Amino acid sequence: MSPLSAPQRNTIHDVMKKENHTLVSEFVFQGFSSFQEHQLTLFVVFLALYILTLAGNVIIVTIISLDRHLHTPMYFFLCILSASETVYTLVIIPRMLCNLRGASQSISLADCATQMFFFITLAINNCFLLTAMGYDRYVAICNPLRYTIIMSKRVCFQLVWGSCSIGLIVAMTQVSAVFRLPFCASKVAHFFCDIRPVMKLSCIDTTVNEILTLIISVLVILIPMGLVFISYILIISTILKIASAEGRKKAFATCASHITVVIVHYGCASIAYLKPKSENTRDEDQLISVTYTVITPLLNPVVYTLRNKEVKDALCRAIGRRLS
Image (cartoon, rainbow, N blue to C red; front, side, top):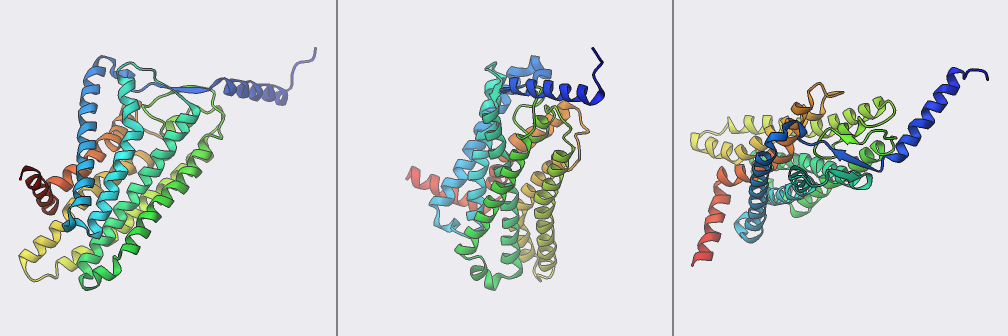
């Protein structure tokens, strides 16, 4: 029998890969396996942070919905952001907590694709909501006389719808590209179905997908971040022209909470996605992921509740009504 030629060997190799691909019907999260002895501690810490996040965001949504003093564009965006953050954490953290307590760490390909879809949609939605909030602050400070006209209810709903639509379109594009790949391995070196850890399980070269992910990351992180940056340059230049120190302080105070959340949110997203391939160790990647899936959603209610006088006053009014 004559030996197989190189093309024939490659064909057989590809067929074997495809056969292996058909065997992969589910993925298995490796999660925090490198911290095996600290699983219980991690569970308690993440559970506490998760409860605080849910409670904080629910309080913000409830207070803004009930208190007529907060029925303004700024708090409308904050309400939508808090609701989005709540769903965002629901997509990831409950399964992560179950895995930490020894429950099955497997996930079907369909469930993995669903988790990735909602994660991408909500993450991008949050990015553009923060941009809309930056635009709102720009109009309020730089063009106060026309604020109610420019930031009408229709414009606010259009900005929210636009943020959600961009998230949905990008998520469908990204998830379709990832789950067209043939998968030969099943162990996801992560605690949820993030894009790059799943792509690493493919049998074939994923350079095209890596480039697509990088392009999308640049568009959905750098563009909104740039718009927020431009807004704040204009805001600061306007504030510096205010004659009274008290006026400048009040103007800065209205932006402090937003800019704090923006720096952390875009900072984590940039570190996680604006690089062609992960140059970090698995533990470093997971630490970054914990920051933007657990810490950042908690930061939103903490910052806006503790540093925002209007929200604190509304909370006091609500507690006062309950006690009276």
